[in-house]
Length: 446
Image 1: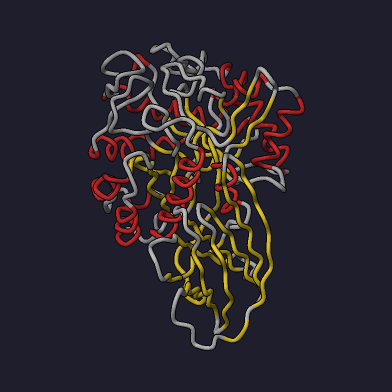
Image 2 (image 1 turned 180 degrees about the vertical axis):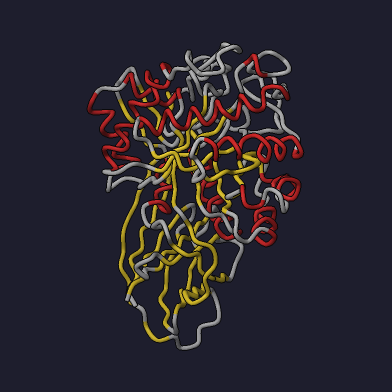
């Protein structure tokens, strides 16, 4: 057994990544400081990592020089980058749009004659096309609506929550289908759809409220029939698409004998804390459903915008906890923003793993980008989570087995002090040093 270990440390605002190789020896019976990995014990399949291409990200991309565009695209989608396999984008505008917009605003246009994707063509689609060119094949996409058009809502505006008017449920379902078909006609691989982004949040930006019963009725009686009528039966439908603390309740409200066959999975966000047990509950009760993180970022309204190490550790901590609880894929929020965390038409500025300094035409990779890469560069879609144990809560650990049999494990140390590990697998052992405030990815092969 051989170990390739990639370790990143961060001291005095400097990132350092080193690679080492180690050999294993026969386990003499070590008992202390042990980390065990059990490839023979398998759990859920992991489908990969991704990020979101928003109107704001596309706008930033439009400002870049050709060289900076290439650098960004390769960083996420190139063979030596973070190997993203999924893209999420929004149906009509969201908070991370330069301004509000919708593809159709005429309540009498039931034939979609005035429907157009002009705004998408301006910013989102050029970034999508370049991402796919770098990837070498179509990238699987997920679409999510933040709000129906204003005329379809009880409050008459895209913002401040409001609800979908009952008389527009059928029209809105057809609108969503038209959006999907328009993207597919351009060659994009729309694979996933969530019913509503954050249906429990009345926001100062584009938003729409659904109770669990309302979401179920819209899915069962309008959206699913519309997808079938439009030949879109292959679209994977995800419910909830909101924070973890209520994902179990929402899943129980919506998934029953009438809707179970319509629903591919549950999407969640991370903004209200760990709640890894909530994921475990959903995994236990709904064993055949996919569980995906569809959005997560660090909001500058809640955290110091200069806390690079904290942000990176937040990402790694959440990914590890989610995977260990049963998550199937992880989709980050904006893949690129400006240096203040925008643009955002309501001032809801956030961190992004990569930012662009337009004044100096510079692509800046934050530490969170490197930390995400410790997972996404090495965990191959189709990997199986495998069992592992650790001797201390001072370390965080997850382990997976790629389709080719290579074992990947990630060790996160969020403390200042170094940890010494005896790594055991298949009756063999080797010593591993985990520096303080570091993340390490191990690749195990015969």
